[in-house]
Image (cartoon, rainbow, N blue to C red; front, side, top):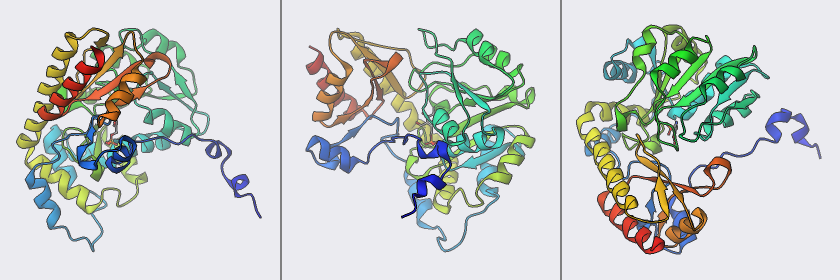
Length: 361
Ligand SMILES: Cc1ncc(COP(=O)(O)O)c(C=O)c1O
């Protein structure tokens, strides 16, 4: 028998799987409960889902036809939503696809990406797939980036810097001064604003000054359509033109396109749900403030990074899981003993607060 792995690209044979979140049925099975009793606070999803208008839009899709490869309707809406010309926006199958496309567009094997951990794992994952070495410049203790460290790490093989703002999982923002300093290096700076709608803070205004800036956004978190996979990016016409050239022609499927357009058409309703999540995050902060043995970091997103003292985060994670509440456990390095908890509905927060109080007291 041929060993087909010998025919594969060597760096891909040993690439480690990116473990995404399990479906609710699996979580329920692990906890020995019913899927409908699962409380998913592990992926920063929007537990309210999308409003009725989005579901209505999904009923009328011509599923036998290919979707528009130019994404005309969606890009027109995105242009209006972001206040940018249509030539500066492009949609992707989630922000994830755009991260992948940027790595493909800007790196040849051996050309580097700078990543500031702890952060979203997809930047390093896509870099590994692209055979682009990842240069890690750890964040400082307050989770701000080590700007001098990043500048020192740059060499003639560096192509891209990825920074999330707010950062997942630490919740803090990239400042305009930091962004300008990095943009002045002339490298591509991808600012990932996946959680923009929860904080309203953007660096989009810098696009007029910097051709090397690209902003990433998503419909997964605020708009409640993570399952349909829609993200987008905003960049110079040159950058967007080249991304349009290399993307798969039908990367936004018809259902995803219809849902994203309906979400934008009904943005007041959608944003209302996002605001409720922020209220719930604040409620959770108030509760955690009163509990001993846990601290949390200020967050601009729909999640809170918590650290435990006197007991391991794993212990808390497992105790929550046994009661059907699933959060994100980090066990490694700077995130040892930390959990990220997504904001939920008021009912989910009630249950979370009751269970956490029981576990921690
Ligand atoms: C910072 C950040 N960027 C991008 C994504 C990917 O989002 P999408 O569902 O649009 O691929 C996530 C998802 O968790 C994220 O936290």
